Length: 462
Image 1 (cartoon, rainbow, N blue to C red):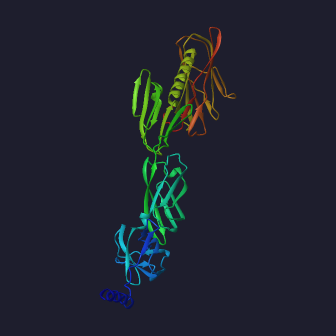
Image 2 (cartoon, rainbow, N blue to C red):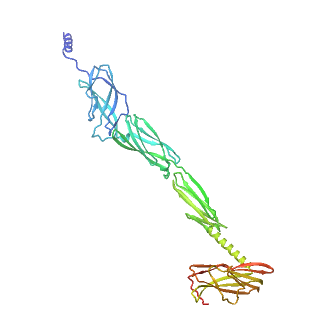
């Protein structure tokens, strides 16, 4: 009786007392990875979940205890034995200052208030930390360069814009960036923009704009070393000879330049330099000049060497002229020197005294001296010791004849001319000429021309 009683009591309890509810039985699989939350954009982190309900059908709610707003809001129905894909969205908190990886628990609760606990790890970053920029290398001969921007995160930014800037170029572009995508752009270069830059690493900047939010990011550009020194030479002129030597640093490193020229001991006296040489060394009959300079990128060293032969040529011509005159004088057996001076006329006329000094260097025969008279003047019929042999007023000349002159003999021929018309300024008298015989040969001599300036004050009475 005892056993039957207890079995009957157990069966009655199973019928009368309802069964106790069992806990939810869920399998949660995260199919996404590297979830990121962009704080500046207030963009949420999105997790892709695959949830299988091994228990009875139920409506499930998702929540966390850190204050993050989550979606889906409300409940998600999942039937017993069903597998459903759920996109869990976690929105950023305005008061959140933490950056980097954050791990916390979230909960899935059934209607019977039983729940499961799952862990989540998301990455919280600012907008500027989502990108990487960079470029290829540049050298002084480059005509273009490729720059890139890469989305480092599992986040779709959609359409965005970027302004790239560097010492080499400025460039703006609008484009779209999918998760982990890299965009590259080819930019043409203007060599004038960087011809004076030294080799090394330079900063590449990009101003990013996404949905009215802006951020600045930086990268590097490698300006690789190139040693390029070009030289040109140019010569011109024949009396004033100019040599121009140019050296241009078309590379991007400091270049040491050495330039040398050689001059002989004569040409160096008439040579000037710009700039002045750094070294001057004498070697026998030559002088070596040197310039040692450092040329910066984009700079040009110009050396001008000017040799002026004008002065030595003038000296040579002057010496030649003197030699010719000396030889001519040495070959002349009769020397004529003509002088003129002012005399004071009693009648107030303009009057000049003309003197011709005749010097015989050798024995001469049949000497005929002829002097021309300028226009508008008359001869005063009063002469010194040597009277003229003939006066031809129509032909306007006066002559003296000497049968012979001894070597070293000197004669002074003088006469006076006057004019009723006053003369101002410079008054010129023609040269006197002599025809004579020496050793049976006829020769000629000529005097200098004589000039008188009206302001002269030398006076004589006659």
